[in-house]
Length: 430
Image (cartoon, rainbow, N blue to C red; front, side, top):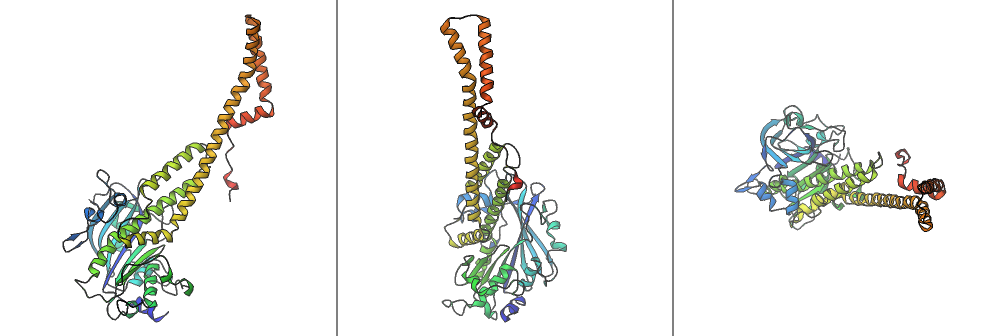
């Protein structure tokens, strides 16, 4: 273990917060206060009205709801256990077409012991300590009566909760500090940031020098004072200047990390969950009859997702946009959504081809049925024959001619077109 990683394992920052995000299935409407938890700083209160001014209106509706459509609830808490103190809980509805009760639970903690060991324990690293989210901090107990925490199975289940860490250093935490406001960060600062976001030490997950974290597009330089790194299973904010305590800029830093910056990551989580469901829906298109109905429903769900959730620009303020793009990059959301659109377009063309074949088949049947009958009736009319027996004979001959025509290659093709193509065998798909 390197010296700087050892220092982080035993370091307790001047300010340390931890946010844990985990998927739940709502039991009913939570009986909590509506809206996001309103963290306060002086006269500033980060309630729905305040946060909505930060985001574009479409994004605010997804994150905070709209009149007549509540999608977020919160309650204050004060539970301490083993160096962690729970200060608030939130629930954000993440309903999808198939899972109307899907939601994200958000637990806000302050931490007064070294944070990296806590993160490693939540990530279940092999040499980490015991799980900290137990006893009075067990999410299942905290959310009892509100929602069931999803395990490791299902479309939206996560192997471990998503974590967002915030740490500001003190003067003796030299590996994280910028020598002066205009100096380049030391490499150890990015290594600390990586360990906090990945919930790991070098022994858990050694990073190749060629893929140094500070070269990754998932790193967001918010200012000279602090940076953020977004990874698949966690994110971290790390200060690069010694925290001077109350009244320091970091008062606003931790407020933003717990509110609007967290909300940008929550929106990314909603996008990921919807794309996961759309991917699953695509894989089931041929699992039963009714291809046209399934493709139509799929296109409707894609259009709803694209209109409601698919945003890559949240706000006129840069950091939140950067955090969302970093989350999307980690989960390959733009590429995955492009693949969904391409595959759905292929299925739509297939449905259109089948419908065109069926229409052509119907016209062919009308031709096969109508031509003999029309010819026979035309001949009788020209001859002026009004005999009922001759008419019935003409009808019989036309039916016989139609039956004979349907046994030909053209007739069989027409009947096949009417029935539509056989349903593909899913077992043959790679």
